[in-house]
Each structure stands twice: as C-alpha cells, then as structure tokens.
Length: 302
Image (cartoon, rainbow, N blue to C red):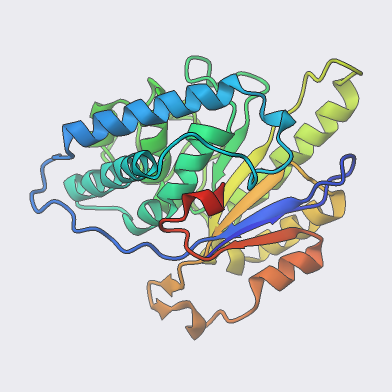
C-alpha cells in the first residue's frame, strides 16, 4: 500500500498527505553487466514524460481541487511505458555498477512518474527557479529513482553517460543524492529520517515566505514540497519530531509518500516495527490516504 500524508494547512484548511506504497515485484534485470536498456523503451519513456510534464505545467494546478479527482488524458499503456522506463534505467545502472539499491526506485517509480510528469512545477533549464516545487527523496539509497526522472524530464545535469557512471568515483550520480553535486537535487539525503525533516523545513520556509511577500493578486511564493520516505525513515526519531511539528504548523503544501514495502535487510518489517503508522500521523494532525496497489494503480496515486 502507499500512504499519502498531508499536514493541515494554516490558511487554507488543506492537509498534508502521506501515501503508503506496496513493494513492487522486481522484473528480471538484464543478465549482462553492460548498460543495455532498450533504446526504444527509453525513447518512448522520455517522450511521454516530457509531453506529460509539459502539458501538466501548461495547466494551472492551483485550480485543481484534489490530486485524486483530476482527470488525465494519458492512457494506461503510456503510463506503463513511462514507469518501466524509470524502473529499467535504475535496474541497468545498478547492474552496471554492481552496486546500489534497485528495489526502492522500482517500487517508487509510479510515484516519481506522477509527480514529475503531471504534478510538479519545475524548469529543467533553470533548476533553481525560485517558485519551483520541491522534491525530497528521504529514502536516499533509492537515488536511481531521482536520477532517472531528472534524466527523462530533461535535466542536463543527469545525462545517459552520467547514469552509466552511477556510484563511480567523481561521478554526478553518487550512491546517495547530493545537492552540491547534481543540479535538480534539492536535499542531500542518506541518513534515514533526514530527508523528511528537511522537507518539513522547506515547507515551513514556503509558508513563511508566502505570508510575508504574497499580496492580493500577486502570489510570488506558491509551491509544494513532495517527499518519498520508507520504513527506515518512519523508525527514526527525527522524523517523529519534525512531522509532529509539521502537523502543529499546519503545513498543507507538504505531501509525503510512505513506501510501505514491508521488508528490511534483516527480513520483514514486523520483526521490529509493528505500529500503525497511519494512526500515528493522524494523531499528528495529518490527513492520511492509502493506495492499496501502488505497483500498477497510477490513477489511485493521482
């Protein structure tokens, strides 16, 4: 399942959302260690990501009443092509480097697709545009998700050659996202819980700046902060503190996706982690939505 957590908004009454996503069934990777992602699949994936992103940014998202009610013209087949392009860029990069984490980017690919192709406002030609939406990958070990979507949406900072150098010394695609290395990365993440805490800070900054500088008819600051987090993030104390504070502040433009894949290095999460995360976030004051099948139900994520 995917849970979407949203903390309540101070001014608008909206809530922060958390989404929880089921573990994806991993497709069989290419056997050869060379980088062999299907060029036709990547072209199709890149094309549909670019077209969908352009169309989404051409519409005013601020006029939509709910991310779950918005209709889309993108077909299921195109959705699948885009999601698989993200997944197999990750698989092949990890295969070639013989190092890394393929599971997280494969499971989170549908979330990344919906955010970068449809929901988020950003400009690959100007990664530091002030009013861009922010994306934070709190589960930073799954960074091939972020590198894949940055590449497919046109960021020059992540070329195909950069992806081929994933986790290599001196590359622009290190084993965890680093904002001082790669344009398009908002936050350096790695220590679990750190990313969601930074996301709370970014959302708090947006709320403060909009309150100070926005005037009637002139919304200079008006953007969202999105975050993907995993079981490890949920277990860390720093995420409890920051998310409690987000609920207290009512940061309605903070949306977190909880990738609840039920697995850790040592085995199933219930070996050490059995709390009801959704109830905890509701107690913080967040709105909690659940997507039962985060693998294939892209519409439910929308």
